[in-house]
Image: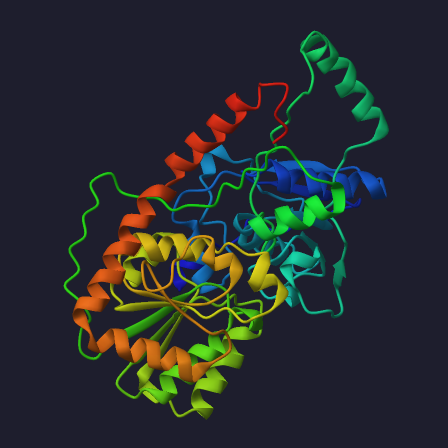
Length: 415
């Protein structure tokens, strides 16, 4: 731990208020904190930060540090220290906390979004509903993210793009490129709901998420080990159904469990650990906590069965398309999942997965036990899932998007 002390430069008092904006690699994060500063009229100073690839590992130690920075590509962080630090995004967090320490605890930290550190680490957290932060002191939840779009900026953009688009034929197609907002993703069920609200569309295209696939990937799994290890990877929110998995493991003593995930700022990991203790799972269950993304595939391949135990809530049933589903398929292990419409968009019962009623630990346990005991069945399901994954690489997803854009140039198509 001594190597992580990263002792600060000497502290000198600041005679006037000073506000720093921490600009990390994501423009959307910076846009939000810039909008917040503009809304309150603060003069600000932007500190641009560049990070090396191993910075995620520092979060596992949860200590204030700037060791994740590529110093030669980052702005200097030296006294006089700020009175307020506005930050957003995981990468900036430990640096913001280091700045507070350097200021002798005087700097106030404002985080926008969902912090990886415990929310109480910050003086104020400005968040949105998809992050599901529990209400409390210092937590402000807005319905939508902050932005700096104004009537004036829209007028300027219209004038700028008129010269480019003015001669183009209608209809004009806009493609918004971005990530999912927590559990809220675009599924067939959501497309149907939008049509009900807005009217039918000539064409609706659903392009699922995907996984990173190695070009030389091969299926070489030999079947379940003894004892078989059942794994779950992902968030531990109640609607994810991990309690159902723990109940299934308790009912089948021959199985061991591995839970990968659990945000340190949220109470779910401790809740599930207590529940596992109540069930008497003991050393048959291991909680790995949050792991670096590069480790997840290895943990999945080191397991024998992979579970998606989502509960039968409206979010799970219709409005989720878990990235873990595609990572599970790519791992080449048998998948047991809740029988829900959103998951059936990708999974086919008894073909590339085994589907069971949601919220039913007994049914889940019986399915896991059946597959673990039947090597040919386990190999067949695993191989079918592995082959399914080939259609859901990020490259294939990009190809689908390109094809939709090209087809949409037909004025008669509305996508």
